[in-house]
Amino acid sequence: MTTPSEIFLCPITHELMVDPVIDPNGNSYERHAYILYRRIWTVAAVFSRFLSTYNLDFSAQISGLCKVRHFIFFSFSSVSVWMMALATFDRFLISSPLVKYRQFSSFRNAYRMIGIIMLILCVNYANLFYCANIKGKPPSSSCTSITSQACGFYNELSRIMTVAIIPGLIIFIFGLGTIRHLKKLRTAVGTTTTDRTQSQFRMRKTDRELMRMLIGQIVLIFISWIPHAAERIYVVITLNEVKTPLRTTQDNLWDQIMWIETTFDSSLSFYVYLFTGGILFRQTLRKMFRCATTTSRTTALNDMSLTQAQTIN
Image (tube, rainbow, N blue to C red; front, side, top):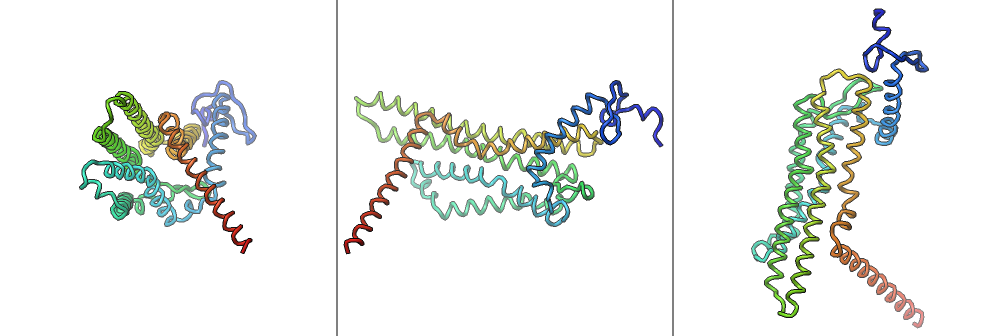
């Protein structure tokens, strides 16, 4: 039974109401808390409906599908950044002045490295077939990988390591090694005395632009994933706490915002290269478009010549 003192407490803040309001369902709330709750709930509901396709989530109803969903998501969400890391390693090998390093750069070794990385990721997240499960009861059930603090800490820390920290360090270290190899190659080629000063200036400028592109890519990876990892670790830490509806809504809103931020890594890479690469990236881009335009024109001319020859015959 509700005591008289509980009637005057706001269900959101659990404090004595000073300026109460009544919602359409007849429930009383503190005015400022209710207004803030409705605003946050509205924004969070838009994100939730957009990302969950209007709540048509069969993995929230079938336990096996929930486990497979999280295993695939965690295992393959870092594939793109690992492909970048392996490409950086391959550029390091192929730019080496040593023949024994350049010999390792081949399609066969590339396929082997991709297979090894995929195997490591799958083994690392195999625990999700145990950890991931359905939480709650329909219609408010959800598929989650954080069923316990032990599972949550392991998977979230593993994810930030495999998505950002380890591949980011690989890209940075072997990117620096590639720039160093290019410096040695240019030094070995050499220039005449007349052009040496101007050539050294261009080389230093190119090195600075390559360094800015490298650092920009690393910063973008960290900005994309570390805030999301911090938010997920906060969810794990507060897993067993009893939260008010207002706090739960705020947590859901931050979770959606941090999740959208993880897309920056794949959606903003071009602009990072554009603004940090300087004239080097723009020249390379123009050459690529010119090559594509020349190829299309050559193909068109060949087609026209073939058509005219067929007409004459």
